[in-house]
Image 1 (cartoon, rainbow, N blue to C red):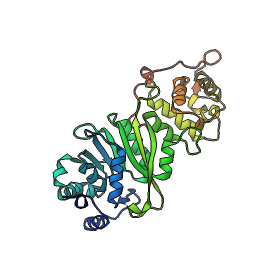
Image 2 (tube, rainbow, N blue to C red):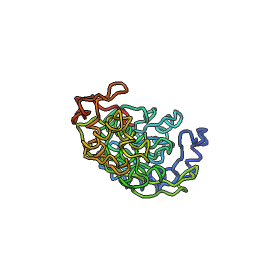
Image 3 (cartoon, one colour):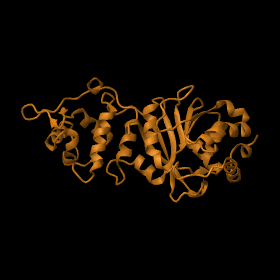
Image 4 (cartoon, one colour):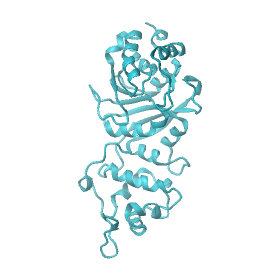
Length: 315
């Protein structure tokens, strides 16, 4: 069976949706890719190894799934819509029966999933729903340490935020938290016309490669608590923004100075390494009071034995 018969085109996608009674919804962020060249481009850009087990989120009607299977990859597809989850194996069996044995479909919510059947996934490749793209990526990287690389298609503005560097106007919580797990880069734009229905925003590809965290001995949940506090009040200096986190503005300043960070700086100026250093020096807080010893002590660097392992979601 040739490429033109394996992959889905606009007519096949609309016909399949009509037969299933599927109407793309904004609630689930459903915009189906109807262009075969686009899904081939995504697979090429993902730069997968032959042995990769690919985790795909939101496979929908199967456009990208078929392209991944066509290249010989094992695919674990996580789909929240029960109708689509039930139909995907039949679509693959009908259009690419020789590849059907390499597909596993999991009917679950990607924001809550904690494991999948079979070998651990090593790559994430997905056309992510716009409304949950960032939390899905962060949750999956936390839940599946086996993920070594990925390529996701997201709203263009979200792509910019995910790969932004310190000092950028769009640098913020998504940028910093993704940087905890991986090096990320833009991998190209995607036009609106390749989707059905056509979205009213542009899309972009983000590629990432996992690396070791900048401070593996500091629990992720503690680092992310600093990040959330720093960006909750972007216009404030870190001394002020971290006052609640530290117990007081004075305690925040002591922690910042201990970490080698200027208390007058703002969150958008710091990279993930700086946030990790700050997390090491959080004062000991009891209830609403910061414990003071003499002039007010700052706890020394703490490792995993101080507060336990990081939370699962990382969001």
